[in-house]
Length: 395
Image 1 (cartoon, rainbow, N blue to C red):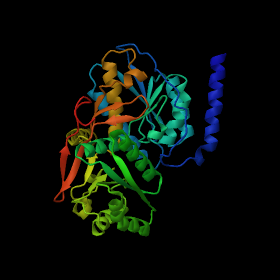
Image 2 (tube, rainbow, N blue to C red; image 1 turned 30 degrees about the horizontal axis):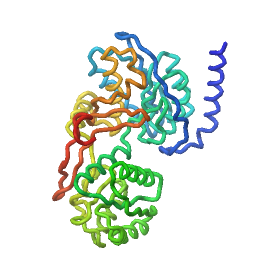
Image 3 (cartoon, one colour; image 1 turned 120 degrees about the horizontal axis):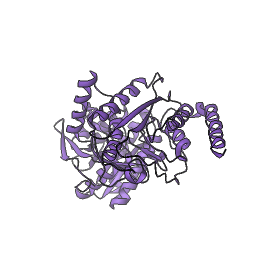
Image 4 (cartoon, rainbow, N blue to C red; image 1 turned 180 degrees about the horizontal axis):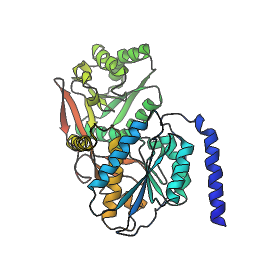
């Protein structure tokens, strides 16, 4: 009787979600949630098939191609497994929190011991809540660390991870005082916060924080004043949160050096991957700048194998599905009854993924091995390779 009442309450809750789904934003935003859950995860029988649910937005017109590539990558990872018997069951979220919640419950009812996905943070939050009381963990594709916790993990690369890597490298290079330049929006604020936390952990002083509005005048004005800000603060570095593909980035890298922020004297540091926009390399502010990227040889290997099998290059997010299956498969291959539990998923040695070594943390976030790169004469050069394990340099 109690099980029936529990299912009835869940059905009512999922129905209520449908009424409010349209109020949710279409991008990853900070979401308040209960992070107190310590879901252990179900026990499995070594050697028996393990059912993994993949929640992807197959019928969402704006994300159906991503859903396809995520599924392809997951199946490619399964083909790599040795003794692990993984059964992949795919469920369509339609990009909707309410649909994802219903599909997550259905997946568990149909025998899934762990869930891979969904894609968006707000969708993952609702889906994870529905199955938390059944001890089922979820490895979402979101990069929003604010949603992580309880039974919900994020596989996407986070600002915290990048900021930690760059700040620790800067400290080893004798850079002790940083100014932060960020856009006055949610991503910019998230980036600023990640840099501030990384500075506190590494003993670097944040001497100045400068924001700018998302207008041409706002970007230009901040770029023109940044030389004075850095000089007045006595900073030896400027950490830029702006995405490399954002139209603001060329303005910053051209205007700041023209207005007293000499990259030969002040270290420019980027929170995002500048190599995705190589046109930036010719700009004065890019010369000698630092940024991070995953293990390039491993990423290239994954892309080549994916293309050989499916006839096209994978979406940049596809590797996250491969990583999720690789982690689950590695634990199942060990013959562990607790392979799907929080304790197993957060093993300190981590896993090998498409971009190198990574591990899931008890707080639901992740840590990834990253290389530190720079620009010399319009070319990217690796300064500090991505670590091969969590016992090496770079962590």
